[in-house]
Length: 470
Image 1 (cartoon, rainbow, N blue to C red):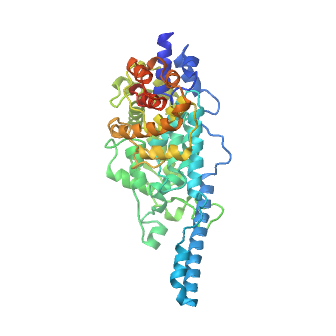
Image 2: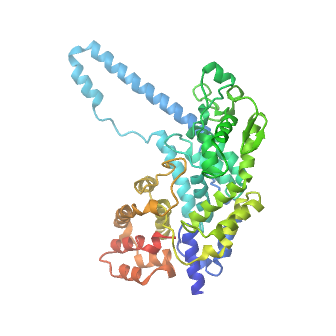
Image 3: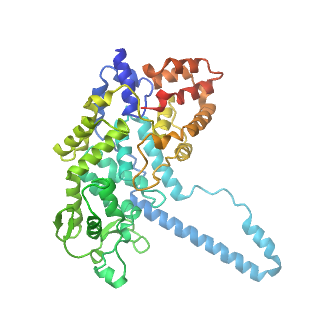
């Protein structure tokens, strides 16, 4: 039982989002079966929050909000200028009035939409029994990342393109992600026009290769594999016409996907050794389907998954096993996840991976039984270098330990602040039993027992190596 309890704690950290009260004991009899059962749970990975808007609805709401705010500001400037003309001797007083501190405003709509989406995401992580499926959602959302700074649809995109397919086929997720308005905006395909298309000739505009390049380099085949620059250019031509309806002229459907034939580069295109006839959106879908089934894609995806969950330099045998499972099941992601859990390499006792900031923050909340303030949570993630839905580049946040080592000092600051706020109400020793159980080292237990205060004891726990790693 002791060995099983240790494996149970390891599972909850390595594959989940950290233990909650009683969760180590709950799965100790068969940790492997418990985590696999999570994959079979009805609705696994989905968020049932009817109040969250679709991506198109969010886009249109923010457009209207911004337009109204800009109009209000313009109106205020005009009124101030008119008053100055009518009362030239009162210019200074009018300016002072205009610049006087305003009453606190409500949270701007774009910010509120972000916080609502973030709250739903964090709540799903906090309430999960183990959190393996949520971790898979986070993994694939980072693989097919978009940026909140460029599109207000980032949270909705994760719900619409990632979650429905997280235990489905890779090709379905690929199609959903690449054709989603958030991705078309983020990687500039919404503005890409075939040079020889009707729109390209009339408007003298041309190709944008960003989406095509990132699909080949990052989302499917992997950097410097079987494709050439010609493949990138030809694939970009295939994807011309994949755009969105303009919100300014379409108040009912603005921001939604549309295929614009007049912007599509006419003719057949050759991509990675295969020629695709011009068949509208089906030309792009056909390319994506073939990329999803390519052996290089299987190897690339398997390597990333093994690196994320197991080690920066994952065992070749594990990568080969996951690659073959991908190929044998036509990219069944649930089968890949099952193969990962069934692999002996996944159960090595060494905790070699540093938790990402979001994982560490959620693990702290789960261990203490707190839900946290969503503004503080997202602020902490940003301070630690992992701002939610704001990756530094299209390749997403790094999965290498080296990328997160420099942020450990900032974690101490956040742990201290958190402990000062809640530590007096908690028994750090009991929290250690919940959070680490048999993983807690003698050194960590002593540090907690000898702490000068309850907040300091909690800080020692949150900064313990066995809590920082998975």
